[in-house]
Image 1 (cartoon, one colour):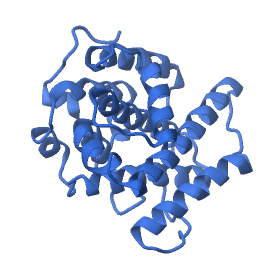
Image 2: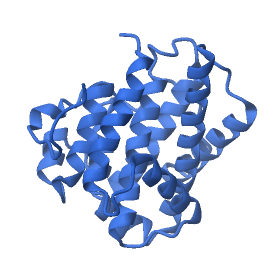
Image 3: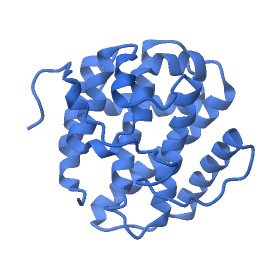
Image 4: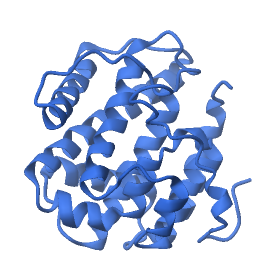
Length: 246
């Protein structure tokens, strides 16, 4: 199914509606995302509710970026495969270090630290399409305090990984926005690809201590089932906000 870009504003409005109900400072989603990117750039992660929410904002933004990188939207763009793989791989590294062991979505939900994060991931899943939300992102969003306390607030390597990831995610987000205005795909610039190269190199060093090899699969196929399958999170039957997007 081709991506209907006209649904993106509706998705963002719904996400923002859910976001304000769980943000400790009642920020809009984009305010929180801006703060999250600034925190990632500074590397100053403290064990606070704001930091936990900022991690959720970065992960939610990744979901939106992955949606725009799916093969049905960019069938002839091998670089999109690389971007999708790298964005997912960053969170997979963080999640595994925080305790993720490949559990399915329902198992992750049962072990969630707080149900406050559920509406965020549900809106992204339901409005943009559940196929874009991988269990790894669900783990990060629902275990954001653990990610910050045990990883970002303590490990320089993790801080650098999230810094580069946040930079790469912004590159993708901005690129997709330009394409939407142009109404057609736009080639990736060398400056954009340089950001991707840096992220891939760090990921490879963390995982293997080696230089990265070219990606052999895209968002639908990379990493031996990185997209565990559609997360039909609506089936969890949990909504923390009243009403639904129309």
